[in-house]
Length: 122
Image (cartoon, rainbow, N blue to C red; front, side, top):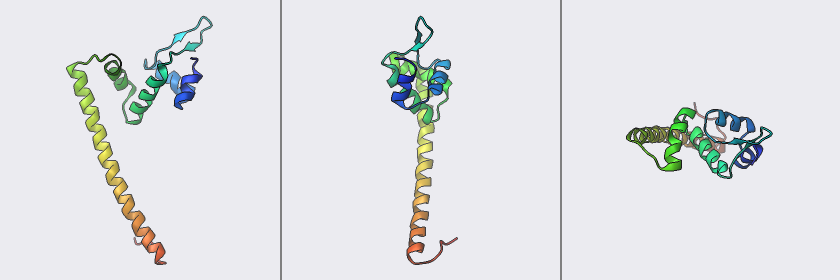
């Protein structure tokens, strides 16, 4: 696949895919004319990279984690890193749930005030 195909399948920009490649994340080979060529497996890899980025992992952390995903090779240090990242994500989830719950309460209060013809309480 040429550069634009995995990018469009996953919904990332070509620029993002070039950045990922600069960070040694997806691998490509160059055609004789110098164009990047990606294997079919690049789509799954780019999707995983997107998920990891969206969870807050840095490109360096992703580079360190990918060998475990791809080959199953794992070290005690990598397990510690994975556990730490999961803990960080759990904390983010907890914060988001609390924020959602507060927003629900505000929505309920605002809807009740509106239906009663009153302004929102301060």
